[in-house]
Image (cartoon, rainbow, N blue to C red):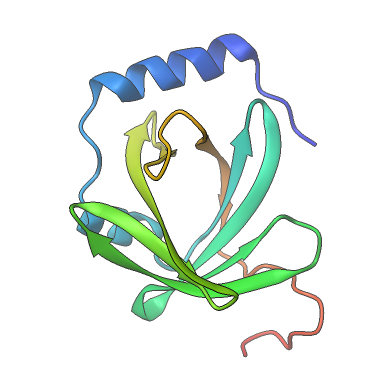
Length: 131
């Protein structure tokens, strides 16, 4: 797992507090066609592949993937996944050319930040690439 210094995490969180969230259209333009890898509390947490048509594929990087989609609600980006219809809404911020995501269902609970990105799809067990 990759670790990020705690001072950097605190700086990123403080800076995001002072910034305006990305609009959902700006988020869509940034993320579509990419796989973004996220960290939580200094450790790699998971990755999400942003597909055309506002479809997504999430993985905790354990080989299992969850398919879903996203939509706009009150200027937030909200996700639903095939296993659960409950919406998970996030506000995204641009910080130093990377995303910082704050979970809006409980803002004190989760803040993820982008570690890296890839144009390649997630490696999912039992899925044929391109399907």
